[in-house]
Image (cartoon, rainbow, N blue to C red; front, side):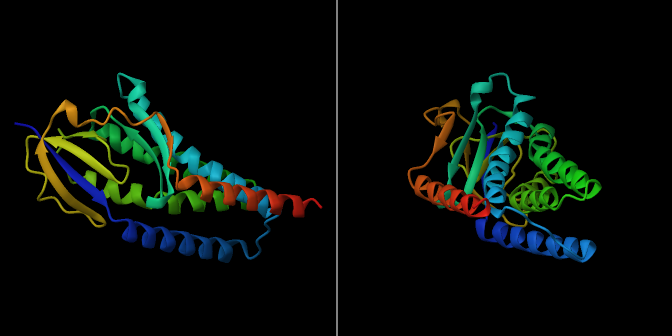
Length: 225
């Protein structure tokens, strides 16, 4: 009998890793460049928010390559849990979830970072670094998933910081840095929370987003004053 195994990302460990990646790569970049020029920081803040959203869109693009029903791909923002998210509420393979996790790193960090270096564009390079830091949780998940059996299936039942793997093997014995096993049970179609809207922003996220956007607008106004 196949069972589901629920794992959750340790947000504290993921945030520490994100900080280490961001500071470490930024220091290396400054050491390499010697000088750093950032004009119009307000625009940079808006682009950073856009980049966070684009990160999740790339996850969704990855999911869309494998799902049968694209309505099972859902996006959201739950800042009280520290996340923007893309959910896949349809079973996909191990290789599919690895591709979906890797896409933002390949394009938004790898490609944009390389182009930033080629064109000597600090903004592009800094956005690539920001995305790398934002992908800390993805990196932890990828390192964990590669350890799992090849025949597992991945699905998001209802948890924006958790993930579910379906298998006839006991996955509870698998360990991953920054990943903790939560529970297991019988795999049932009813476990999928279909009431989650395709695009969702939590009520607690709205004030934070508005303050962030207002701050960016004020900074842009001051930049061009």
